Amino acid sequence: MIITVLIMTSFFYFQTTKLGNNEIVAFKKSMMEGKKAELKNYVDLTYSAIEDIYTNSSANDQEAKDKAAKIIMSLHYGTDGYVFATDYDSNITAHRVKPELIGKNFANFKDKNGVYLFNDLVKQAKKRWRLRHLCLAESVQG
Image (cartoon, rainbow, N blue to C red; front, top):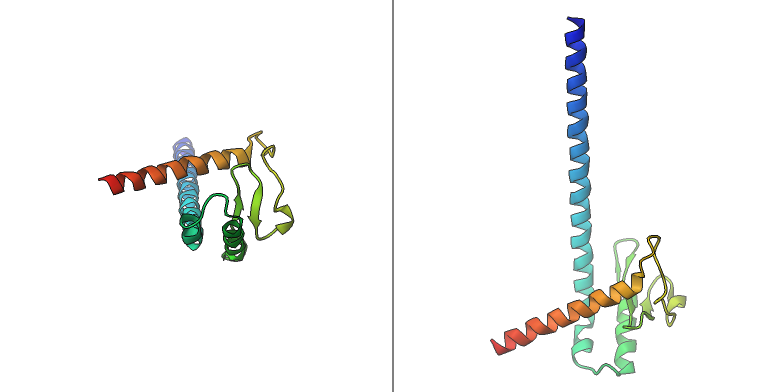
């Protein structure tokens, strides 16, 4: 009888632990998905704040770049959220929290895993820009 109780207790303990671990994994996944959605919303809001400047100026229009940077530096999200901007060469063009970084190049900056973080951000931005303009072109043609 004691052995049966021990076996049953062990079984329930391991099942509860497994269930708890599964719940933790699901919770972490849910939190991460929520944070990704929140970040996407912040980026979309930032883009909408400068979209008029972006669409109505040339790539070499320094006045437009300065105006966009000023707008980006004025934006903040929550108590400590902010947006920064770089150009396609990984030069910081706007940074609310550390304005002393503006003009500095981060092309050689690696994260703790050895990933060139800013170069990867620029690649993603270029990819999304091409995708956005491809979708716009298709919607105009179609």
